[in-house]
Image (cartoon, rainbow, N blue to C red; front, top):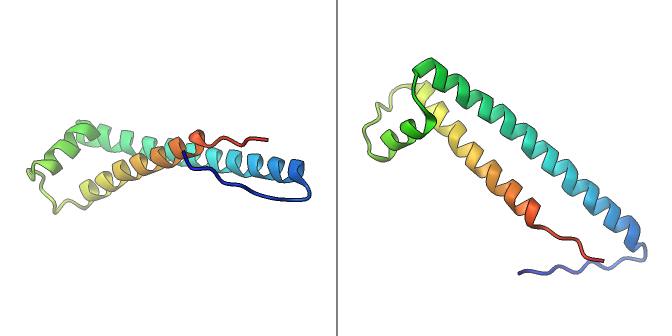
Length: 97
């Protein structure tokens, strides 16, 4: 586990600011994840198959890659994974007194 030390003459104010910044970032990530998930749902309904199936086709190189919407769809799926990783990292942070 990595530990970070921050020194200040106003420890409670710094602690409050850090907690607020982390919460704001968490909310932004969650909002972005909701939008991205919504976009994935639209693609799934339009093409009548799941994002998982699309990614399987891509990994097996059986995907017709000239469809720009499918490329966008894959990008949205990767974005959701990245956002989830960032949220997991934020959720793992502990501010100790």
